[in-house]
Image 1 (spheres, helix red, strand yellow):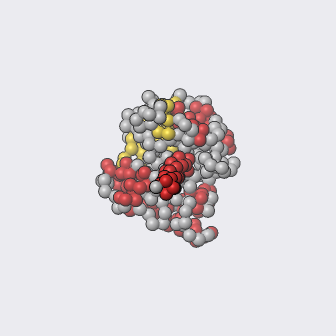
Image 2 (tube, rainbow, N blue to C red):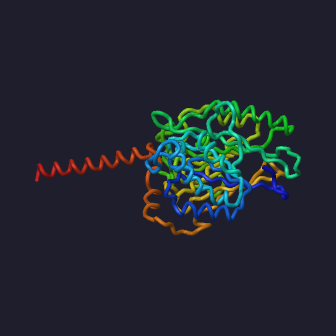
Image 3 (cartoon, helix red, strand yellow):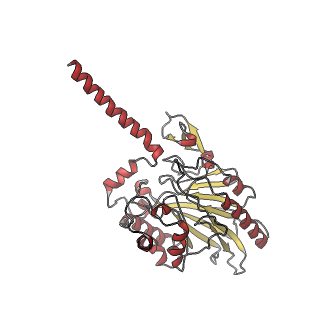
Length: 373
């Protein structure tokens, strides 16, 4: 990859399409409109391309792989039809379909000539690699660098897996090799699916009674949050960051040499913001798929613009369905209901308990009325 002659480079992040074989026309409309409007130099898919859980993907072996490949082909069409390079990593739901992330990468995505990147050595999962962005002058000098990390899947017993330490070892080795080639640490951006525990440091803990307070769970159980002071204007926090219970030191590794400028994730579909903790920007990008829950017509994509003449600074903004396509969706009732549904099992439990309590109260009242009336 290389900077344009005007020394800019535009990345589009697309995350959480979470699609099924009957791909939503609204998802396709958003993707087509976004790519057509922005004409990115590279598209980065950051996981949950497919809804791997459930029963929509049929068969086993080659038949299952063909079914997934057909869905992926439709999702990639706005990019592949324009010969735009793309890179892909994976979320917690992709492998749940029954095909490993490595096999999806090699057997499905790498069949496209515009799919860039080679998987990291050392068994560091199926969606981990880096993409240097070279100078526009054709010298081959890396000016910026992108890391894609496979951040894992659901943990046994609930929550999410801790970040794989093998990826951190590979990252340090790659970071130092880039320094040798460039003469200094290369400004880099990380893309992965699941947020780091440090995302809570860009939020502000508030009282439950404060308007707009978002309830957190697991390691932050009984805590409530809003966006913090370092978050850029216009950010959206509508659900708590769903982080691993165990912190394996990913942030500390990324922060130790100052090469990583930012981390951008997906996973929590309704969130879209960028805040700063220590020397790294921590960003969320909202989901783009209409066959899973999301922030209705504010589903969208994120653009990031790099500058060769100022590689340590970048610009970022989002493009939404309502801004690109409009406010009408093909299944408004489904869209409304999924927007109101709990995003995780942890979020669903309090709602279930309240519902059970309400039913129990009605039953008790009926028993008392029958006894005394």
